[in-house]
Length: 213
Length: 213
DNA sequence: GTGCGATGTATCGGTCCGATACATCGCGGC
DNA sequence: GCCGCGATGTATCGGACCGATACATCGCAC
Image (cartoon, rainbow over all chains, first blue to last red; front, side, top):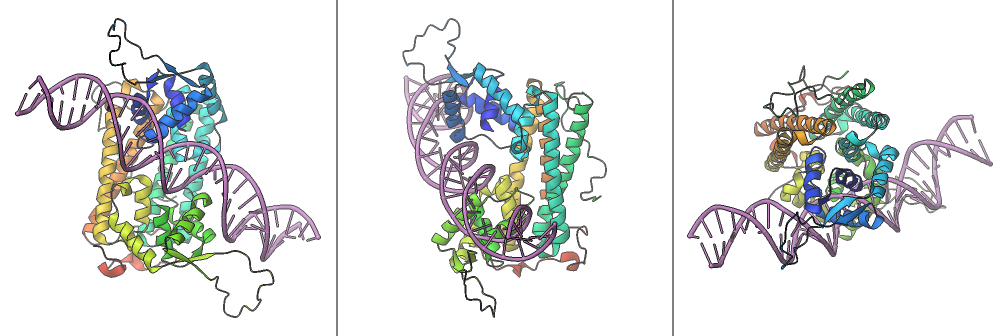
């Protein structure tokens, strides 16, 4: 997962570790908290050993004379190699079942802009399948095992079920959009930089949690 | 986390590994997929070494003569010890920041029936705080960095933001209910099927064995 | 009588996290 | 002038948990 994300990000521009983490955090903020250095640095080393990334000389700007009295400290900048790009493409093409869990799906989705449409569709449908299964599992528990569980546990399941139903609907929309060849929804004016904020996403109709079909 | 969940479950009744996994999966289905045996068995061993659980003799029913021509195979049943119960109570009392991430919160919430009200409130508020921070982060990205990100990444953030807002609202409700001394909402009739325990009334404060420092 | 799915215990390699350590830079306050 | 302090930056270590895999038994259907 981390490997995939790093290869994806480095295709946009070379970066050093700290920067990479920040970009990663920004890009995947909706999925996971923040990449730990404890996984980032070892992974970078691994990717370098595999020849998928290389160290790029720290650009000394153009006219920076100061020749390094103090050796110009750390700052290791990495850039992706041709093999690295191949590897990334290969990881996308493989995109199988392991891609459908929460983290795996999120990370792949974040790089959909670099993914061909057929694969996008395949991933979206695989994810939907998986969430539908989770949803059925939760319905079963809520239906059959309800009397065995305490009120808090039930409430947790109910909330989870709600999230599943919502995600399925979201995926349906995305799938429909893919099929019709349009870009991802974004029905609002994101990116126009002006002053949206807050008023997008009117509370969807109903708002009552728990309308079971 | 696993340690906590196991100690919690074994307080309901002794179980063997396989059973434990099934119960765990049912109880935490909304949070995580399924506990792997690769973590379950080692953890059981660890808990046993610490003296928090012990092997209980496989109950040979009452009149089961068949004395074991075939040695009556595996099936190791574990039960919690007094020290284990203490440990569980201690883990609840500690409930700090690490309790507020997705998994940690979910697992603790699943055992709220064994948690005193003050701690429940503390955990719910800590979680809300954390989600609010994540929400602000997402709003920032959607507001400030929007033009740097592609439409798919933005859509992902939007969906994540939506989920955050929804969870905050959910937590608000739960907090309000806690403060008013009522049980978790469940305002609906999910799965009632046979109508269990009408209106699952207010938990008299003494519902759980459980004291905090 | 044989295959097969559920039950059941167990290990191994690998990924990732959280805590920790340490060093430099720019800046504002005293 | 210099002192602290927060942001920048690299790095390691132990531990938690996963996914694949192995293997053995039971009951049942074909």
